[in-house]
Length: 279
Image (cartoon, rainbow, N blue to C red; front, side, top):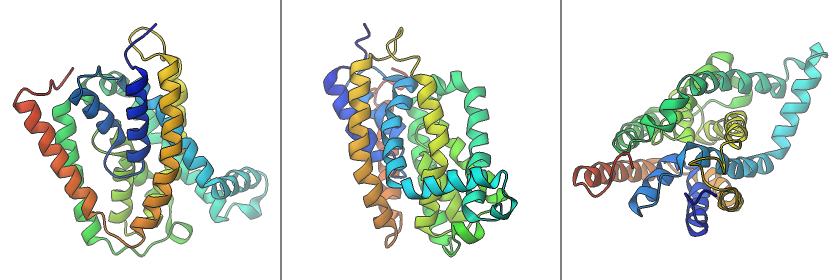
């Protein structure tokens, strides 16, 4: 049986996943960095993808009414032309279109995602660079557009490619898509909401696919993985509720400062030989 992740590590990483998944600070980067800092083995992309099922379940429950409206209206619109202009039906197509980039790129770069992209030096740089891009977007955005009135296929594609950047730990799925939304002039809470909805197919798909890796070879065992997933769900539900309320009245400056400081710290620790960038 695999001993890559113990019970204590599972608790810590589950809490970390729940706290960071919806914040624009990269949950995968935190799991990778914290594991390296404490001398734990890298839990790997499979473990990260599977425990994200916990936080995605939190999204499914939190947005259950909106999700049900989207699914039911989109489905009925397939044979009811009068419904095809409904915002929920259009949202269904926008989520599908926005998911295609990360689906294609995720399959093309699967090996790099599990190896090269997990290098701590790359994570440190992406935390800093994409943090500064988020700061620029937050400062220049007019934040006036809404999903119901302004989301289009073009915007969905832009969101989709922004989400696909999160295949590199340190970029942040929510950070990348929210940044894209701000650059397109969407309101902060609207950009975040679409970010969470857009992540559902990609995260669920990746998590289910990686389920087959758990307990096999060098992957973590089932027990700790399930525990971490359950914890990430509980913590994640509270985190998404807090985050949406917070950004309705606050800028992302605090998250940007945190990203830059963390990125600098990672690069410094690697340069000093305290952290092994590939261990």
